[in-house]
Amino acid sequence: MGLLAGEPLLLIGAILLVLYFAQPLLVPLALAITLNFLLAPAVSLLEKIHIPRAPAVGIVVIAACCIVGSIGWVVTEQLIGVAEELPSYRANIRGKIVAAHEPSEGSLRQTIQALEEIGQEVFSGASVPAGSHPDRTPANAGDPREVKPTLVEIVPPSGNQFYAMRDVMLRALRPLGTGVIVMVFTIYMLVKREDLRNRLMLLAGMGHISLMSRALGDASSRISQYLVLQFLVNAAYGVLFGLALFAIHVPNATLWGVIAGLLRIIPYVGTAMGCVFPLAFALAVFVTWWPPLLVLAIFLVLELITANFVEPWLYGSRTGISSLALLATAIFWTVLWGWPGLVLSTPLTVCLIVMGRYVPQLSFLHILLGDEAELAPAARFYERILALDRSEARSIANRFLAEHSLLDLYDSVLIPALTLAEEDRHKGSLDDAKSRFLFLSTSELVAELSEYKQPDATSDNNALEGKPGEPQDRCAVICVPAAADDRADELTTMMIAQLLEQRAHHTLLLSPTSVSTEVLSKLAEEPRTVICISALPPFAFSATRTLCQTIRKQLPYNRILIGLWNAADDERKQVAQFGSGRPDAVLNSLGGVLEQIGEWDLPQPEHEVVGDGPDEAATADLQDFGYTR
Image (cartoon, rainbow, N blue to C red; front, side):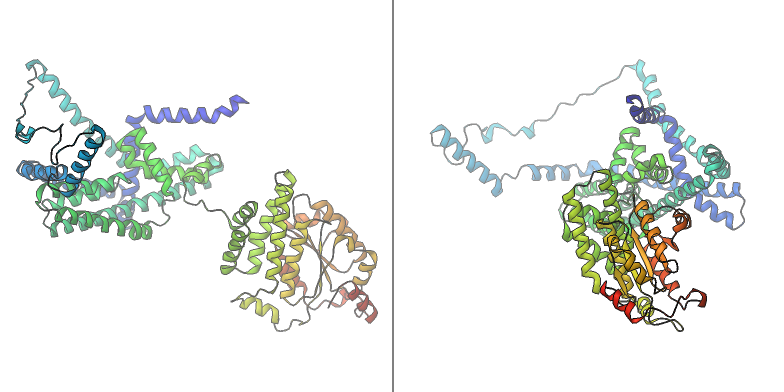
């Protein structure tokens, strides 16, 4: 057992080792896949105007190389200009550093000196003259800034020049080689898209073609749309930032706009770095503090608008990554692959989320990393009840009811919550105190909703008024819980009776122990009366079957309907499972029960009508049991 429990950890460890040691191959491959998702929409657009695949790929790749080359040329040229101009700003930089670190004439400095003098006087017991300090160096002792540093020049031996040149060439050739590999992978993927897709289908197996097709389509759509929109947003951001810097006369505004747009590709870190460089340059260039403050203000305004309005509106849920997961995965991929991992963190995480969505064994990835972390209303209602927070549970029900009908509230929230409670109760994980609190809170909520009217329930009003040709006196329904002393069955019986009464049906709630021969003999005189048995799984079939057979023996002509709420089996198969005393219908939802009773609430064929209806004595006897027509 210990070995089996350790298998997932061993698998994760093996995957991490492969990702780390295969970095020289996997990083170019991941970059190529990302570029493929970015360029594939452009290739598809050219193919739609009847340009063959190979020329379309060539046009798109050449255009992309031209754009990258132009940006690189602009950045390189302006970086050289900045490097040449920086020495002329040395005095300005030194003045700002001195002003920031030595405010000798400021009130703060004088206050600090006064506190130090008071402290010396208190602890030494001697008076220290104002303005003097025993540990201070006299003012005429010389300023350390006047001491000129000694310049030391390191001259490498002549024999090491070859090795130094080799190191420089290797450092230059390594990124160039990586770029060539990435370009080759990208072109191959763009040209052979169908071939790669078919290979993935073969790896998945013939039985998983539909699943793999949906997964590939989802990943391609999410990543492609995200990368294209991110490219457009970052480009617009860089243009606006550069124009704003040009308007306040910051030198090399084009360079800072390009850098800000490019660095926004890197999550979190890149955005801050895009402001640091122009801010530092503005501090070095300008004598006053206003231009740097304007640079910071421009950055904050643009970033607030982009991050809080533009990106949520454009991106929406296209990536499906939660903010916390995006930060965690950015750190993970950076530790694993360095700067390339930080750039690729978002596309790689989207791939993991798609795998978790379509591969059951990896569903934890979708739960941990995805943005769909909200519990269903039924689960939230049940969780608040378990926490003994009745007010919040009611708030959940009220918020749901504000957007849905009362029928949806019962079918989608309360009955599923009761089902969860029944499952936990039978497992022994729900104690008696919380069980009583759940049933009491739910019964009070259902009782409060007995007079509830949906504000825009036009369909319900039409149902109450009846359609042309339908009888206005609707059939009566006897609602019976399947098991005696089962609060869950009683609550669901209250719900169905309440909904039937709102639809002008006469209803009567009977307990299983009240279903006696005398009562059933009276009900047999009214064949239109429907018997509705309410049962909540699990372990509800046996009691329901016994009660149904008992009723069927006495009421051979009445309709018997069983509400087996949230059951997973097919409704037709469930009818057959009841044997000879089978009901007329078994339904799994309140909506289905109401619809079925509505279909039965039509004029009965003549051969199904037994007698002329109950006589006055029979009606009086039924009223003694609480039955009303």
